[in-house]
Amino acid sequence: AGSSNNSQPDRRMTVDALLRSVKTRIGRRPFAAVVGVALCAGGAIALAQDNAATLEILQIRPNFYMIVGAGANIGAQIGPNGVVLVNAGTADASGDVVAAIRKLTAQPIRYIIDTSADPDVVGGNANLAKAGRNITSFATGPGGRTTVAGTDADAARILSHENVLTRMSAPLGPGQASPFEHDIWPSETFFERRRTMYFNDEGIEILHQPAAHTDGDVIVFFRKTDVVVVGNIIDTDRFPVVDLTRGGSLQGEIDALNRIIEIAIPPGPFVGLPSGPNASDPVQGGTEIVPGHGRIYREIDVVNYRDMLVIIRDIVQDMINKKMTLEEIKAADPAKPFRARYGVESGPWTTDDFVETVYRSLTTAKS
Image (cartoon, rainbow, N blue to C red):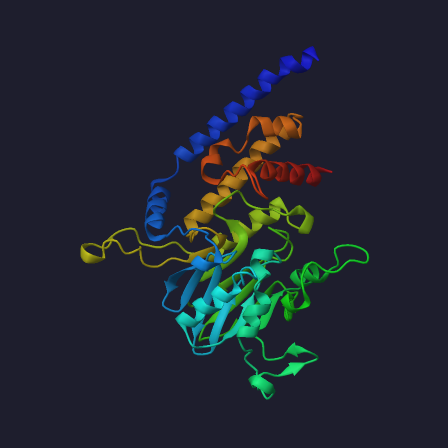
């Protein structure tokens, strides 16, 4: 016991040295990156996650909107062919979402793309689909709708990766029901790495990102609009949620962030900034990245988010190499440099939960 007590100060000194090193690395970012952060902060809008009765609608592009406050952020592409939604929000908020879309356009909802099987992503699937109409609908039944075996055949299509349907339809246990009602399940799935579609005069890529936040995550890239909706792979309000029980992984999360960075392009150039009456306009150009929760990101924001995750991973790995236990690692607080920005002390995903997940990911990978 005496030997263990004597060694503890040495460990803490090592941790403090690592944290000082992290702070130094953050402080030495290149000037261009600092300018990029300043410019992106000026163009992005932080929106509150309020209840369903107070949804906020943010116009990102002339034909693309973000709906906030219905659970996960919802992306909405609008055009002559109808509406494509990315994420459906919660069931409780679905009526408000339908009302918000009707304020934007008279066109029907055609597709709903689920970025994962999270309740705040898929909860509104059924109600939004019933409020829409699929692209091949030829309604002949009562009320202008066609039903097949009690199912609304004219409803908008709900599209996801196959793993999302598997997670939603699998029973909770022997003799138990699945966690979601049947009408919330995706009506169309794919299993390949990349699914494409052309809608509203725009190519859309739906990119499966395996073992990231979960095993069913997709990134939805609107190529002409230059908007990427990434779901809960990014949550700007807290540390990344990596759900190991649903196939997520630390390395998969990092891979997903790297893929988003590869897709995105920065705004610029950083010279000739607007002046006069339009001086407050955001910098022109650059990919807009819609996260699962929180404000819109630009490429540099995803780089910083990725770097934060990699830095904490490396610190925890160093502690593991020094034979520190999980409790010792939590006490040493490897996420300390980033707590002010992403720390959460209560709720379903706290900073301690994140640190433990990093630890378990790294120790499982070694076994």
